[in-house]
Length: 83
Image 1 (cartoon, rainbow, N blue to C red):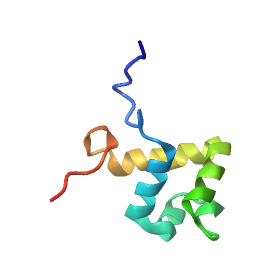
Image 2: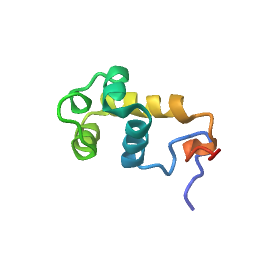
Image 3: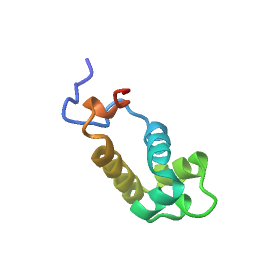
């Protein structure tokens, strides 16, 4: 039986979901200001960002930390409640 990760806000969330939600929230320019990596600055796309982040752990750690800091107010870092 798999262990539950109640204290891990990223459990069950794909890297693609993280990038897409952050890009939707901040835009590429705002994202590149918060995480200083070229894949967010020069001809950004979700595909190129995922390729880079999957190979570069320090950058992935920064992006995941930004995701948690941005969306931590909502349970399990899922979709925010609609108003």
